[in-house]
Amino acid sequence: MWLFLEPIDVWLFRDGRPFDAGSDHRAASLFPPYPSVVQGAIRSHHLVVKNVNLHDKKAIADAVGTTDNYKDLKMRGPFLARREGSHIVRYFPQPADAVTVDKKRHILKPASPPRSLQGLKTSVPTPYLLGLDDEPTKGEGGLWLPEENLLAYLGGGKVAGIPGDALFVRESRFGIGLDHTRRTTQEGALYEVEFIRPCKDVGLLVEVNGYDEWPQEGILRIGGEGHGARFVNLKDNVSWPSPPNPLPHRFKVYFATPTYFENGWQPQTWSKFFERSVPLQAAALNRYEAIGGHDWSKDPRSAEAHKPSRRYVPAGSVYYFEGDARLKGDAITDFGAEIGFGQIIIKEW
Image 1 (cartoon, helix red, strand yellow):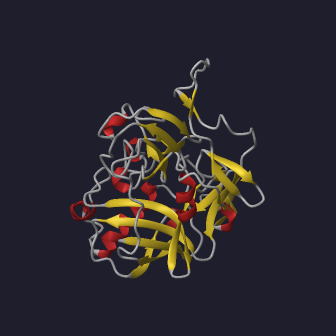
Image 2 (cartoon, helix red, strand yellow; image 1 turned 60 degrees about the vertical axis):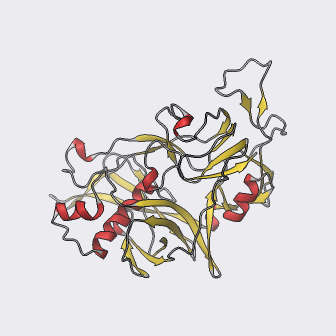
Image 3 (tube, rainbow, N blue to C red; image 1 turned 135 degrees about the vertical axis):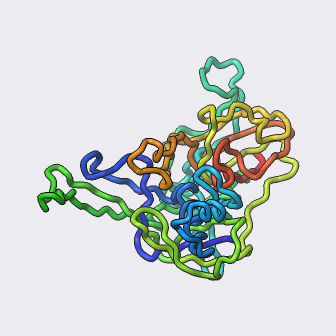
């Protein structure tokens, strides 16, 4: 099933940094949230749907698994989406290889294809570089592309994006820590929390497999402070772009969600994801994102309650390959494929 989630109020999706009134004065919000956040909301609501006793740990594990075992759940997303007429349109982060053509109209095009560096002295980790044939210019960042435009872009076309504030806005709210013993405020404990307010008809779209008996619509809790979301079950009326099979001799991989590689920005071997060896020719990616979490099944005061933090390649990254190959699965990531990390769209270059 595909679920479209719309906010009842503002949403709060914090990053992985520790936060309280005495340690850090500002809690930033990430949007869209990571798959690890949404899987928690989906699994928690599945316990409600199945009427599971929340004091029975065995019953909980039988229904949704454990911290490291997601059991029957398989997710794709979440993706930023907007209701446009009778359709739900997905929006994707600006590709990292984008070149700005017209800032006023937010027109982008892909950087010129990778070109060999033969004869040049360089320390770059790939034998090719993107954009060598483009005019030097300062690009525009933070745009979002509707799915139709993204597919056209990955095919080599010039397309228009839209700024993030046309889809969601950030709202800051301030507070001050309290001394409950003295019933006074704490000196130096002023803090700021950033919330997300999606624009009208904007929400999150996520594919969920393995869970049945969900109603056509309902309300679930999601994110910090237990804020709510209305969900509509779209059944299977939404599809995902299928990769070519076999893959083109020259193909590029766009990451629609963050991905984790054991070796930093790439895996130890690409043969884990492709049936044949295909050398990476070039890559465009932004700064890594650190993703951790909290295990609520553990004592919150213990070190075991904190999940390990991993550095992820961000959504919007584009990798260029050359060679004859086929995909082994529908995701490219060393961790979290079953809950939505490493979701990809592949096109020829």
